[in-house]
Image (tube, rainbow, N blue to C red; front, side, top):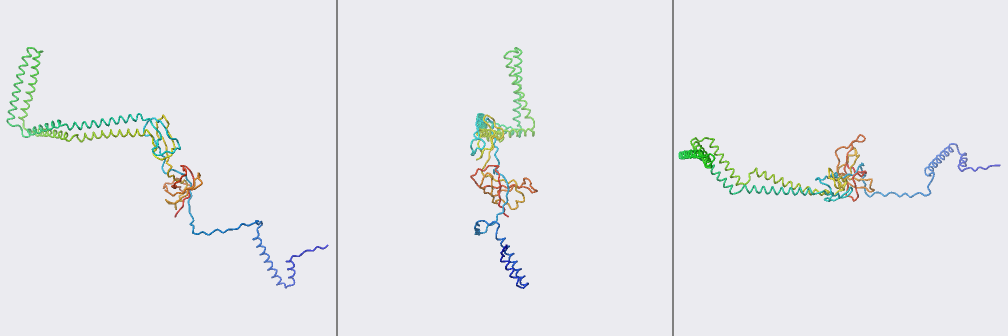
Length: 410
């Protein structure tokens, strides 16, 4: 049985070239082999091993209408923190708490009552302070009025005139007439003294315990004093004027003049200072008592959120009674920003903050770069950058964590 083998066209073509010269046949075969190799390579590249049933149509991207600059950003982790530190609020007075009006997490307005204290003792203290102020005002007014009494002023003028007359007498010395009158006065006093002595002896010899004896004894004593005074006056006039006498007489005039000036001018500067200090102290006590009474109602100093409540009804507050946090103006505080990233960061650079608690980002800008390093990581110092967030209606709480992307500008 014969088997017919169908030859391929390529084989028939190769056999037909046998009739050609060998050089031409070699060249034709070489060109043919090169063509077959190129065809095989093209087929392997163009045809995939598993072509899809339908190829998607490629839509070319539209060209931008303007040039878009590439953004260079610096990323850092961090947490939210309030712009101002928490307020540790302590009660200013020591009194029992009668009511606590807030609890942790509650929002309060400025001036809202946080707690109320028992004000009984505070009202009593205010009443006492006001009474002491009124008493001080009355005393000062009375002393000022007494210092300007007309009778006292006239008496001081008379004393000044007498002191001046005595100074003039001392300065010029006694006249012969004055010395003679003083001598005669002494002699008269001496005669009266001797007569009184005789009468005393007569009556007392008769009855030492009688009334007449006692009366004569008193008269004798009075006459003796008068005689001594008259004799001293006469002896003083006989002495020459000394500088000590002049100085003493002038000092009496100066003292009398100062007394008159004080009465005419009112209180002395020293007394005025004492009265002013007393009055100021009494007024200060009243104001302190009023302030303490107002502090019996503990008021919120800000629009804040209550973080801690450390007081209870019936207890006396000691230390921090309330801790308040102001949530207005939250800022993002980086925690791991390396010093290598600070080169192109400036205050005012835009920033985007992504918080784990929210899907949408928050816009802001660099508010400050804290100059003090907070540590090191990988051989590089870490610095803190504060990012001020734009106003938002979201409930942003201290401690929320996230990541900030700061637009770096050279």
